[in-house]
Length: 62
Image (spheres, rainbow, N blue to C red):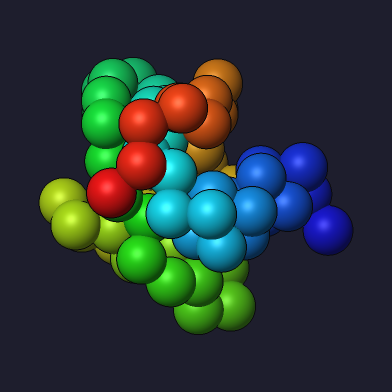
């Protein structure tokens, strides 16, 4: 289990926003909604967990 997956599960449970880099593009203040196998569904789209870099859990909640 990757560290990104563990942090994303915790962010979904606590309803925290996240920021990360995905394929060279920066995403800020994203709502993670649920995890399916190797994908995380967010309010701005779906992302492969293996391609997420520099994941940050924000203190802001939704």
